[in-house]
Amino acid sequence: MHIDILTVLPELLESPFAHSMMKRAQEKGLLTIGVHPLRKWAVNEYGQIDDYQYGGGAGMVMMCEPLAKAIDELSAGRTYDEIIYMTPDGSRFNQKMANSFSLKQNLLIICGHYKGIDDRIRQHYVTREISVGDFVLSGGEIPAALLVDAIGRLIPGVLNDETSALTDSFQDNLLAPPVYTRPVEFRGWKVPDVLMSGNHKLIEEWRHDQSLLRTRERRPDLLDEN
Image (cartoon, rainbow, N blue to C red; front, side, top):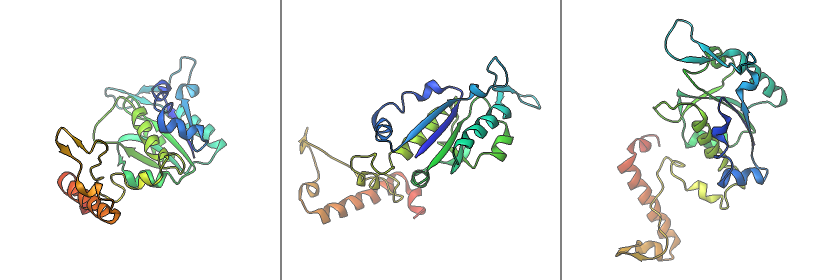
């Protein structure tokens, strides 16, 4: 899979992709990530990529020309399955989307800044608009990193144990069950006996019941989607 990211602040994306699973995915050749500074396509020698908004009001707007030129140039080299704009008013990102995106070959992510991007780019280039929550951040870099991480870990071969992703929270609209490790007893707190039984059928039944219980208590809205 290949993911390109258009950003005003490429420095913000250096660390998230240089460690842990995203680093391993790139070293294995399973994922390539291209981070592109939008100022490369600035409208003048001063690196301008934003301007005042028509109609007045506080806040600058990312201009059409740099974004269109960047998208056109990148699209000349590959065909994108999706051009994604990270924006608070997009569709709420979830595990189902991550699963779907992980099956794609090429993605382009646009990181917004200021008051956002000129709406003509949204109308004529963007195919998906995605939000990571009902709040506003200073830019789209952190949401883009979140998106890449959620997608990248699902690519076959990235996780050491690929079945691990199948038992993550939200995969079946259920939260993951409680997990335990050594020691068996700590400060008088004991691991549930069923997990020590060696009976895999009982263990799976217990885990499913715990997932249902935890989801019912913490995220009952997920059960309404089943």
